[in-house]
Image (cartoon, rainbow, N blue to C red):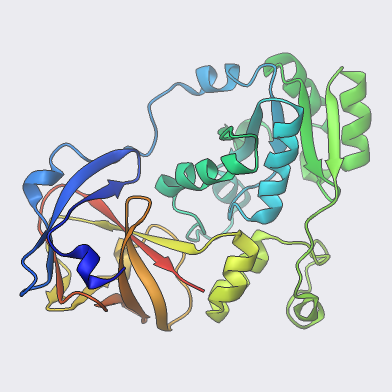
Amino acid sequence: MKQTMLMNQKLFVHLNGGIRLPITVQGASRRVLSLSSSDMKATRQQEDDGTPQSEQLSSVAGGIVALGKFDALHIGHRELAIQAAKAGTPFLLSFTGMAEVLGWEPRAPVVAKCDRERVLSSWSAWCGEVTPTELEVEFSKVRNLTPRQFVEKLSKELGVRGVVAGKNYRFGYRAAGDASELSRLCEEYGIEAYIINPVMDQKQSILNREFTDSKERGQVSSTRVRYALSEGDMNYVSELLGRHHRLILMLNDDRSFISNKNMNVFPRSYLLNLPPKEGVYKNCSIVFGKESVVPCRVVVDADNIRLELVEIDCIYIHSGDSRYLNIEFGA
């Protein structure tokens, strides 16, 4: 965004969740972007809307459910949502608490929880102008289900009309069921089953060099997104996600970050999702709303995230209620 477009304008900062707050760009001589703490009152983003899970699950009745883990919300996941939307009302059904139950080491998500709604909303253009709804089931409550019991749950408890899954999808206790069994059981229980081919990664050259997991057959996957981030290859990340990677920081009122002229330094403890590898990243932006951006350069190191503003001298970040800072990595 050109400096002249920023000066003397009333902009709005979008605080993931539909809240729009005014920010004022002050005098051209100082080139300062200010966000006051008074504007931040009563804006704490809720991690969920408090809707009971039973009520959320009942809303899926008659819908078409895409099955998967949906960590990165990449283009392969988007294709599942597209196919679900073609058949009916689209839902994404995934499981929570898998890491705790299976003893996996905790790791940061690719997409911050508070940012998932924005990503899913962006898919509406591919889904007949309908935004897929995300539903979560506690993994501990379904992990011991046989493939038959799982499909029976979809039919009798959730009342779904159809399911969409990738050709390599596995389900049931110890992943005993495959896509062909899913189709057979769905037919038995009167559910439509749509099995689609996976979206393949165009960079097949890295397949043999980097991936030894038998599940990796060249398809776009969350594993590949994490790999691309670990390499700092943001072009590759964008190709896999179908969008630029957005890093979300939660800013607290303890002022434990450094703000000095055109540089702001934040501890990594503020991060809500996975950053790229340590390094310098140009063509980045601090994002306000859907279109307003402040160009910046991002430096990721072992302890901090440093933002170096490009077209304005300073952005004042005042103490106040917790809020989110959105940083988008351009290709």
